[in-house]
Image 1: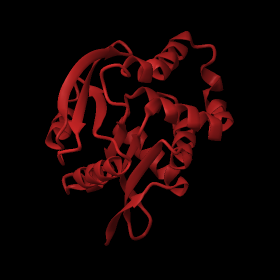
Image 2: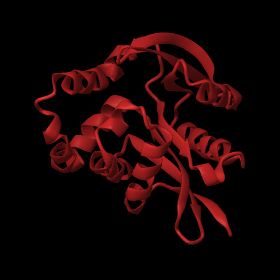
Image 3: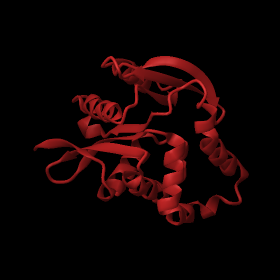
Image 4: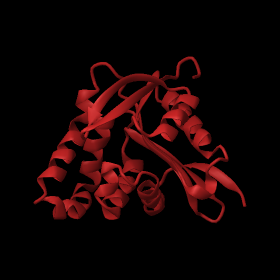
Length: 201
């Protein structure tokens, strides 16, 4: 079976959302449900500040993806403009849950909190399905993302990951990221790594 790295398209949204939920099950976005994730990933390919890639089999099955932002704050705004209503509908059930509302606000404020001392460009999420793990898929997706960041003129890129996620932390270090800072996010320690792209790392 032949595999290819392709730019993420709207048609990939359902499979990418499923991979996100299975690969990042304890993440806040996953807790908002599959409908929200589908709308989010349907919006990303049409956002000028966003891009992504999928690892797709010849038969159309997506086994991995990476989603990126030239500016995370801009992606939030552009996503709301393009699919705000459809993204809001799955969230209606959370309106009477203050804890969820607080976490939504924290998520929306995250770009401003990291704006001063960290690059705006960011790897938002990367997941490789179980059937494709250990085959270099994650590194291939990250290499494609780095190349696109360079094309868009981003000299550095950051990624945030839970400090206790040893596997993900090790992966980012292997891809050339270096720990920049550890901060609290949603009440838990979060490592923020930065990779410098100008010198090819």
